[in-house]
Image (cartoon, rainbow, N blue to C red; front, side):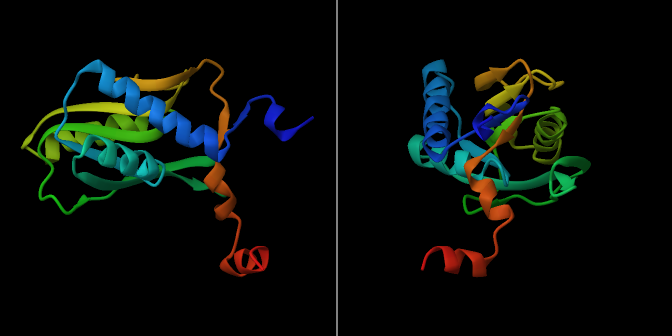
Length: 174
């Protein structure tokens, strides 16, 4: 069986990943909702946030949150949300689009959305956008590209770097 056909797993190529970000951006644009700033959840939302910030010509803020820390990142641990948001555009304010690559349990997205609303009084509205929305999620994002009824484990193209060392990369590129 080819790895791309493994039951319970979804394998994504770079082309599929970039196309998915563009398609999600199209959905948000076609909704007509205007936002003032993009906040991405790092690390999974970094690439999504970067593209959205460039396309929509608005500031990008980065909030680090992580719940995948055990068993090489495959088992959920405790959720950690950074106390500060990194942004060159000043404090997070106005209408905020919160982006990530996927929503799995929904815990991270829900808690970060609450964090933005309670810790940043200048925020007037928060909406969320993700590429993949798994059925196992307790929270439905405002915008999503693909609903995954079987909640597969998603293998994204950048994960190869999780197991690679700089030395291996140098050897690969010689």
